[in-house]
Image (cartoon, rainbow, N blue to C red; front, side, top):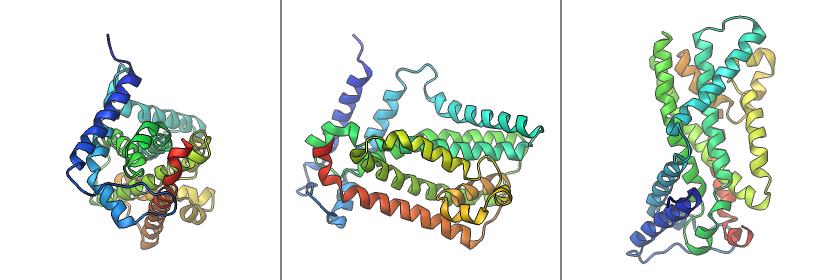
Length: 301
């Protein structure tokens, strides 16, 4: 008799927890949950580091589970954003009545890939605490690891998109320039921002159960206000570009990532400062919100 997906999920999570707990039994320091307020952060970070294998094991288990019931398996990690990019490209092609060129298509694909990653991580992360009731009630560990596990899983889903994008760029004859290296720190900033967003959303979901339902609409609006469907200079012509760059958290990150890859753009210090500010604010704010509330999770989930 085959195992159902929920059964596999329970067994996988149990195995991952048992493996980490068995390795931590040799240590005299065990993570102790706190009742209220912010914990000793130095000890909290030590506990997170000592349980890093828990994150990787749980992420690997979730990815394996997700491939059981789909025909195309991991191909969906690439098919989904490509279909989204194709739909938007065709829509804009029809509306504007002309060919936009390979640079625009690559710009669109890069932005869609990024927002698929952010959306996937936020959606998964928002439920990470609620779906881990058994772990939270029976296992002592830093709860911040739960949404971070889902961010790692989403990032692993995102990685094939990078190679697909490179193939498109080479095939379409758009040169890869040295400025494309700026996409690496931009991607790191996006990863930090998304980690903070996932931690914030996972905690908010405990108190406000509609958080997960609202997230897709918020992220879709953010995408429309970011340089994804248009180039940054077009945003400045249509809207208040400076306002969007400052108050849209991901505007500058997406601008750097896409612009450096597609057109070899360089960016001034102000653009980098805004991107670093929002990534740091999201990470610190999301982490602080979670750890200051995690003592209440067991009673609320």
